[in-house]
Length: 42
Image (cartoon, rainbow, N blue to C red; front, side, top):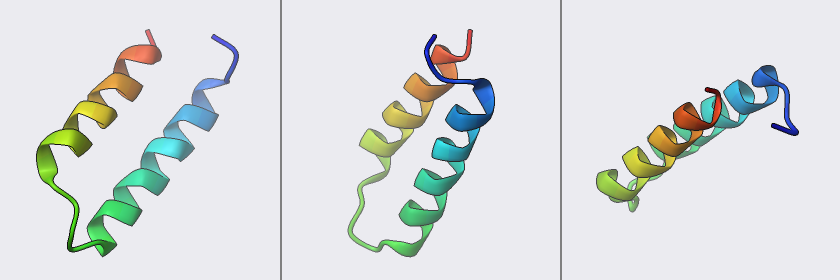
């Protein structure tokens, strides 16, 4: 893993904020991306 856990958590937080502000984003692909980020921490 090249990135510290804090960087991944920050990326995830930014993605969540961007998604919350966007009205045109479909939920399923976003959940898949967030799940992938969560799995990379292990």
